[in-house]
Length: 158
Image (cartoon, rainbow, N blue to C red):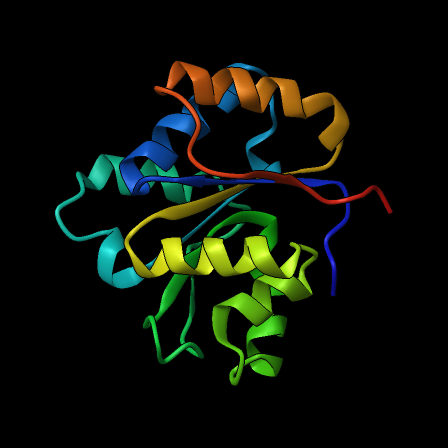
């Protein structure tokens, strides 16, 4: 199930994702419109519990585990990306995370790059809704965090 009107951005790790989430919230992006996706094995170990709480608070519900991707281990996801990725994971156990990301609307080549990043400890952040208006805000927040974190992808409006 493709997700329309969404910006996706790869970040080096979970602490950078949390920093970027904070900057986006400071720019009046509703925290319920932000998702963060990362591998459990690279995610929470050694991270300050307050950071984990902040990350969990960017979600309309708790961090969700997705265990269908044997090649990279369980994933944790917050926010509106939870349901579509969980549904995609059930279908995409063969093609893995790349297939699941492609199912939510990310072009296959970029989904492959994002999947490789997740395997290597990076995180994926998304901002849902009003992508055309919010892209500039996301770009400024990325610049404040030290520069580009890979391909910024935007899905089309519905």
